[in-house]
Image 1 (spheres, rainbow, N blue to C red):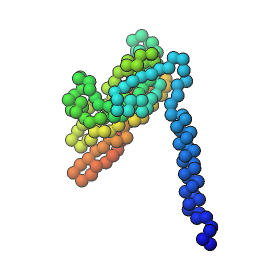
Image 2 (cartoon, rainbow, N blue to C red):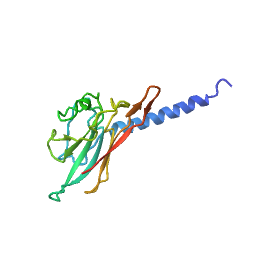
Image 3 (cartoon, rainbow, N blue to C red):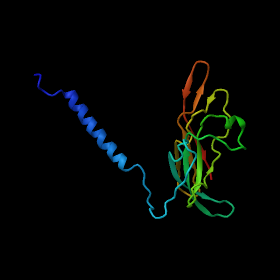
Image 4 (cartoon, rainbow, N blue to C red):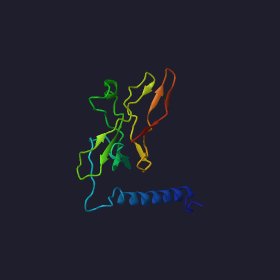
Length: 171
């Protein structure tokens, strides 16, 4: 009876083999660009996780009716450095930001969207809320987009609730 294989070890070996197989597939497909001749490359602040999430977005200029394509880029560990933002907002530690990037060959032409520029209330914790961890667009010229931060928290004297939050982004 001692030379029979242990069923638990056999299951663990199967899980290990499957895990290694999945990791090897993921390793080979970490990133790709459909256009290899003229790739669109955008750069953000180091350690901001710029590019953690991306979504193609379409904006219609209400004045001219011109339709423009953009890429919305999440940077969930970015700081708000815009001088026009409230000091209470600029002092939040790594709240995250969403950037709008035109489809161009420039790497530094993205602009930060004013998604969440309200000062935190006395029962909110926006530090490290990871706004921009996910972004999505309706993909239509009159559509909206959404950006989420899954680590937004509210707290009181006896509780701390991690609600997360999503903000709607209009044209």
